[in-house]
View 1: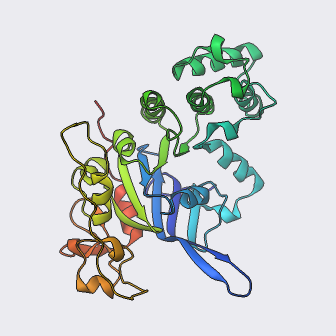
View 2: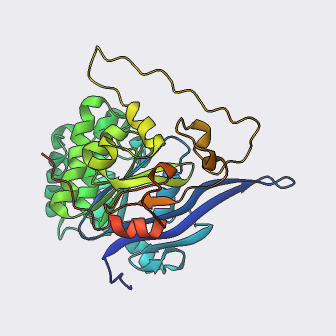
Length: 348
C-alpha cells in the first residue's frame, strides 16, 4: 500500500463533496458536504474535533472516513490509496486501523451475547494474544484502564450495564486493538456528565500514550475544547473556521463560531443569558452568497452576492468570512495541509 510522503497520513480528504438526491419525478438535492479537505496525520497523532450543529455534515464526513459513504466529488484516501479502490485485504486492514466509537454504545452490542464478546472476538480474529490466558489478562487490564472493575462488568449482558459502562467498554476494546486512528462520533453525548471526563481522559490517553490519532465529532464545543488540538467547524456542509483549539474557542473569527461559543453555559449564577440576536432582514431572497448570511448580524452587502472563501493569515487559522478579508484567500486543501503542522496542546 502506498504512503503519503509529505506527511504520514492515515486519511487525506481532498475537495470532497457529498450530494444526496431524492425523488424520481421531481428530484431534489441536499448538499451534505461541500469542498471538504482534511488530513489526519499518523505523526504527530493529533486530536481533531469536527464541530457543528445538527445537519452541518459532521456524521456524513465521519461516514466518508469510514468508507460507508462514497464522495460525489473529490477523493478520500486511506494511507495514500483511494478508498473506493481498496482491495479486500486493504479493507480488512482499514477496519483494524480505524476504530469507530458511536454515540449510542448499545447499538454496538449483540443483546444475545455477554459484553465479553466485543472484547474476545477482536483478540481472536486479529491474533492479538498467543494464548487464552494472555487474552484474558489483556482484557482485564484494558477494562481496568478505563475505570471499570472486571469482576463487576465481565460476564454480564449489555442491558445489565449503564450507558457509561457500555461506552467505556468500547474504549477498552479500542485499547486492545491499538488502531492508527479512532473516529468517535458524539461519544459522550448520551452519558452522565460525571462520566464524560473519564471517557475523554481515556481517549486522550490513547492519543498521547499510544500514538493514536483521534477524530472527535461533536456539537459540544466545551468537550471539543477540553480534548482537541485542532477544531474544524462545519456549517451546512462547509468549513467555516479551522485552527488550533485554544485560539478558535478563545477568540473565534467567524460569526457562527462566535454564536456557538456564546451558547456555552458559564458556571456563574449572576451571568444572564444574552438575548437572541436579531436575524437580518433579507426580503424575499432565496439565494445568498454566504450560506450563513440569513443568521449573521455582521452581514455586509457583498455577503448577499458573493460566497466568501477561506481567509488565512500567518497563523494556521482560517475563517470563511469577509470580516477576515485582510488575510489571503486559501483553498480548503491548503488549510488542511497547514493544520497538519499544528503542535499538540500541552494539557495540564
